[in-house]
Image (tube, rainbow, N blue to C red):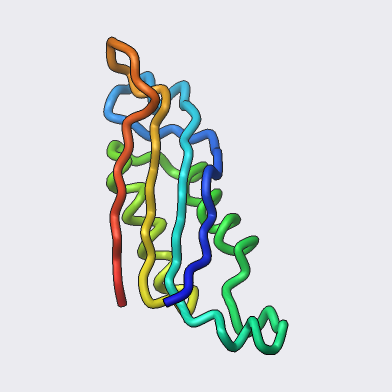
Length: 118
C-alpha cells in the first residue's frame, strides 16, 4: 500500500502534566504517516484523488497548538482520530515527540507512536 508522510512538523503547544508545561508551553515535533491507494492520483494528476498534505498539516497544527492535554498520548490520539474522520485513508501512524521534556539528564526527545486503522 502507498503512503503519504509528513515528517518533522514543529509546533508550539502547552501539553504536559506539570503546571509549568501548560503555562509556558514548549516545542513539539510530529510525524504523520497515512496509508492509502495513490494510484488514481498518480495516474490522473488530480488532487481530489489523494489527501492534501497541506490540509493534514493544518489539522495537526490546530490540534497541537490548541487546548492543552496532560499526555502526549492524548495529543497523538486526537490527531489520529481526526485524520481518520476527515480523510480517506486506511490507517494512520502518528508520532509525537517532546524534545524538551522536563526530565534530568541528556536525551534527544521523549515520544509516543500510535497506529490506528479504520
